Each structure stands twice: as structure tokens, then as C-alpha cells.
Image (tube, rainbow, N blue to C red; front, side):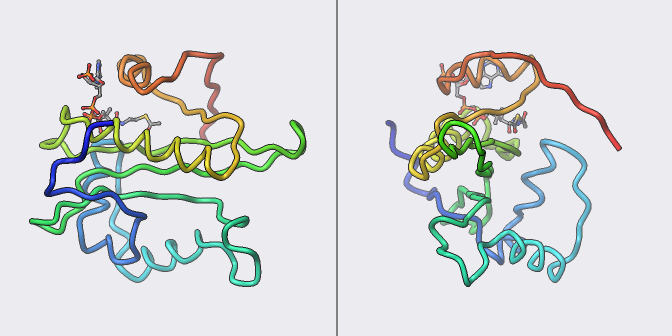
Length: 158
Ligand code: ACO
């Protein structure tokens, strides 16, 4: 795999990525309302595994950031959350969600890097498959990331 440009690094989302423009990056995806730092951090904390459980087993949400060393801003982000099933020998499935690369950084393979990192996490924690939903226009991108179209998405909004 190609190395990231030397100005960039990948790491888990940090509690203070609110101050690094994490929510700004997500605006390429959908409506993002500013919850304020306190609510952002309470939400962040609620996604962590409970301290009494084995953290390696209990973690459900893995959110990653690609950060610029120069600007200390988040330039790309993505999530995989781990669904634990009763079938497939109590198997797990990784669901990829909310992939976003800031507008000025698109087309530089950062999306690919985010997806490869999330797949690696999903496989490392033992998921037998990793799945996602996307628009028709993003199908070629996900095919380049190694995904194949399967079945259909159904949605019911509240
Ligand atoms: N159509 C065709 N090919 C594409 C597209 C597209 N829409 N987007 C990327 N590709 C190709 C690239 O040309 C590249 O091909 P190459 O390896 O042959 O050169 C390859 O896919 C990898 O592209 P990246 O440079 O990694 O793409 P980028 O960093 O721009 O990330 C992304 C792609 C995530 C779709 C980004 O453009 C983005 O944030 N878009 C807006 C938000 C969005 O649509 N997010 C995905 C929602 S679906 C979900 O979250 C599960």
C-alpha cells in the first residue's frame, strides 16, 4: 500500500477532535449541527467500552481521523462499528459508516486509506464480513476498495 503523504497521519478519533474540525469534515456527507464541545465529548465518551468489560472485546465503535501535522486539522474520517450476531458461531459483522474526506483533499487516496484502515480493524476484531451502504455514484470508489455490490438497502425514516 502507498504511504500517506508525510504531512498526514491516521489515528483513532480523539476526544478533542471537535477542535480540529472533525464536524466540518463530516459536512461533505450530510447536515451537521454543532452540538458544542461538551455534548460532543459526552457523545464520544458514550461510545467507549464500559470500563468493567474487557475493552478489546467490548469496543463497538471505531472512529478514525486522518490529521494534518501542519494544520492540526482533521482532513478525513470514517467509522466501523461491530455488530455482534448469534448466527455464524456468534460471529461479528463490521459496518462502515460516515466516510468523509474534506473537499480540498479529495482525490488523493485518503478515502481509500480510511477504508483500508477500517477493513483492517474489522478483520482484526474477527468480523467475517465488512459491509456498507452507498449512493450509485460512489459504487466505483467502493469497488476500487475491494467491495462488490450485493442486495439492496431499505430505509424507513422516523
Ligand atoms: N467515481 C469514480 N471513481 C471514484 C469516485 C467516484 N465518485 N471517488 C473516488 N474514485 C476513485 C478514485 O479515482 C481512485 O481511483 P484510482 O485508484 O484508480 O486513482 C479511487 O477511487 C480512490 O479514490 P480516493 O482518492 O481515495 O477518493 P477520496 O479520497 O476522494 O474519497 C470519498 C472518496 C470518500 C467518496 C470522498 O470523495 C468523499 O468524502 N465524498 C463525499 C462524501 C461521501 O460521498 N462519502 C461516502 C459516503 S458512503 C459511506 O459513508 C459508507
